[in-house]
Each structure stands twice: as C-alpha cells, then as structure tokens.
Amino acid sequence: MSHELGRLEDLPQDYRDDLIKLNLVPLWPSLRAVLPPKVPTRKTRPTFWSYQSLRPLLLRAGELTPMEKAERRVLVLANPGHGLEKMQASAAMYLGMQLLLPGEWAPSHRHTPNAVRMIVEGEGAYTTVDGEKCPMHRGDLILTPTGLWHEHGHDGTEPVVWLDVLDLPLVYYTETSYAIEGQRQPVKPGHGEQAYRSGGVMPTPVFERSNKAYPMLRYPWVDARAALVALAADRPEQEAVQVSYVNPETGQDAQNILGFYALMLRPGQTLRLPARSPAMVFHQIEGRAEARIEDSTFTLNEADTCCAPGYTAVTLRNLSSEQPAFLFIADETPLHQKLGVFENRG
Image 1 (spheres, rainbow, N blue to C red):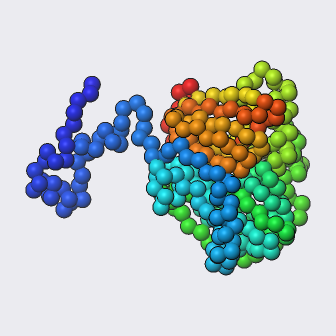
Image 2 (image 1 turned 30 degrees about the vertical axis):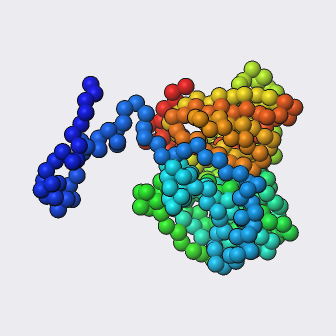
Image 3 (image 1 turned 90 degrees about the vertical axis):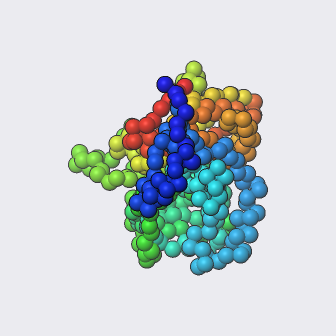
C-alpha cells in the first residue's frame, strides 16, 4: 500500500521547536528516503579514473611533497556521488594511487582498516607486513590486514605505483578508525607465500594447520594469471573465467570486509555480470576492455580503474580479438554477506 506521508513543514513550528530542544526527529517525513521502495538509495556513481591522466599528477606529488611530509604519498580516487571530501569510491571502499620513489621508505604503522595493494607499475619496491618482506611486481596483490605492522621500501631505480583498496569508509563510519606509528620492522626469513603456491595442498607440520588469521599476505600475479589461463583451457564452456583471492587455510575471503578477484576475458568476449547488492571496482591489469555501467561506458586501458554502484548489472567487453584481457575486481560481498543483505538479482 503506497500513500503520501506527512511533511515536516506540515507540523506547527512550535511543535518542531520543542522536538529540536529534546534532540527528537519525526521519522515519517524522511521514511521514504531511508527505506525507499525496491532499490536502495545509492550515492555511488559509475566513475572512471584514467591512469595516463593521473600519473603525471602523482609523479608531481613526488616532487612537491617529500615522504617525511606525507607519510603515505597518495592521490585518492574519490567518487563524486559521495562528495570528493569524503574520499571514498563507494559506501565501504576507499581507493588511492600511492607513489614510492627510489630510496624512499614509508614508515611503519598499523591501523584498524584493512588494506590491500594491487601493484601498478615499477620494480624494486617491497612491503614488509608483520615481518614478511613482500616484493612488488605488476599485478601482485599484497594484504596489509587490520592491526598488522607494515611499511614500504624501495631499492630500485624507477618510481613504483600501486592501487590501495581499503575498507576505510566503513571503519571510519563505525568510529573505529585509527593508526599507531612504529619502528622499522626486522624481516623474518622464510615465511612468504611459497608454502601456499600449489593449489589444493598446504603445509601441515606434525599434521596441524596454521591458526594465523592471514597466513598468506602476497598473491603473485604470475600465479593468479596462470590459474586463469589454465581455467579457461580446462573449461572452454565456462562463461566467466574468474578466481577469488582466499585464505588458503580456510577457503574464506582473503579479508573480512572486502572481496578480491581476478577475471579473464577471452579474446573478443563480452561478459554480463549480474546486478548484485555490492558495489564493485574494476582495475585493468593487462589488455583493454570496455565497461558498460548504467548509462556510462568506459574504455579501460592498462592501469585504468572504474567503479560501479550496487544493484547494477555491468557488461565487460574485451576490445582485443586476439589477446585475453585481465582485470582485478574488488567488491563489498563479504560485508553484505555478514550483514545478511547480500542479493543477486541476476
């Protein structure tokens, strides 16, 4: 049953003044705004960020702001639907392009938001997470989970850039976001991702599994790419050639709030992704693709990024008829599933 609700201006001014004095607000004038029919109100807009356009500005930031004045030298990929000052790409996702120059060290700290790094450009840099030194190569995914010490260093000769993806908007909204600065970490030898590089098997010293919340911190692109290529060859009938970044000990999502995936589009392929409740971010690792999101169409060259609001179908098309295209995807699925609001509307 649908009917027009009373408006705030319909109420006498003296009554409204009395409500304000007691910090009270009538619900009915705003009920449709907070509980709209059928589809939620979404501030997230289809938005595109060209790496070719932002890269010169990021490099100039390296000239204008030394590391000791920045701590983390980042340009935030902000969604205008939320307001640029909010510094968020969607309701729960923050994106930033971070620059590290040769010889620089971004000091050690830890914070409550979860973060991942998708490496965009350059060689010779690394992230040390909880004492594990994680080399950075194009397409690698590196976790810096909530509460773990991490720092960035650069022993190479060219600038290194990566895409940060954090659940910062959610953690900030819940008033639980903070950071603690620390000292340079000693590196623990021999505790990298090597033990988990073979799918389906894992280390079990004396028949026991690891109880670490984040046993694998670096997911090399060479392995994820090989898995996608093998999957495409093994299952030619499968439309979506996609893998998820997971905790190898549990099979659950690699982190608690955001989900991370790699997708391969076969040469010339067009793929429609269903309308699901979580917002999504797409980052082009290799090749060129077209993303159609609502009334917007974006051409993604290598290192370009775009986002799509939730409850929206997305159509991806590989613009090459000869080579596959590879994309990194981040979304809010784990959060929605934990809250019990996840939907797939097809």
